[in-house]
Image (cartoon, rainbow, N blue to C red; front, side, top):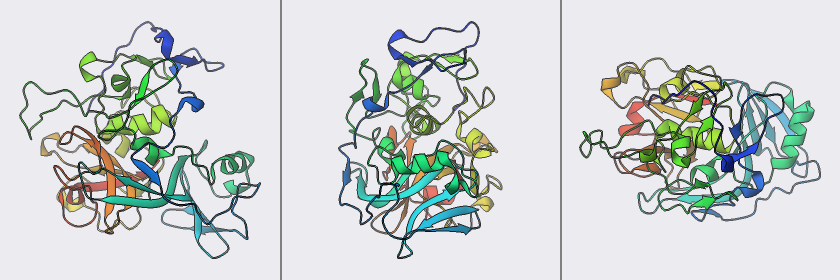
Length: 360
């Protein structure tokens, strides 16, 4: 999952992809206009209306209470009846807000069905104790509490099997059924059958200039493809606008590989990475919260490297802890069962290879 780097004179981005010039900067980057982002995908169903009624301040009606908890240090917003309305973790930009209940299914790959009222969104700044009193947070919370605008889960499911293609006004296909990667001419089914190293700009088929000035060029054979870390960078970075590194070493932001992400100092480690061997499997995963990045050690050939990453979605209707990731076995993002069920509990393939988790 190493990145493909091309440095040198800055190349201008393709004219049809440039929609913003950041003030005071000397680089171009690709932005998606908010009004061009898709509504909830067809494979996501909003099944009911929450009991929460938003007031003009963006909070549910009735008395609310702010509560501090430890391990990890976080702030909870509780409703009048003690129900959790939102969770904010120190050092993390992802927040979990209670909203309308939704169903996420992938009938072609699994019988699992995730029904959740958790909406995971990216805040403009990392949370810190007392941030509920700061203006940036009040403005953000007023806009997004109770909102049905696409969150990280909705975005993630815009790339699973049979997800419809979505284009912006310039004709760029920014969502739709994604592949994992091109067929490996030296691989065999079940053994490196598809190549890794496909990032979001490969999927989009456009060059991308990162904040440090490094420009990455897409490879035609990787069009509409994203490996596991490329999928995370698509959802969190290209779509939700979390800063991205060009590689694991160039720039600042979310690194290119699963190993780089797991070992970075971004966010908060909710399950600390203590090693990659079988003895390093977490003894408890109860601390996991929807939206957490989960990291795995799948390939013994990569020695001490973490080699897979996904997004924890919560429990399915059978009570299992489910995650979504891009995988070779199903050729793209999935919560499916092929090559191992997408469960973090029990002793299945992914449950036994889980090594750490991070709240970005």
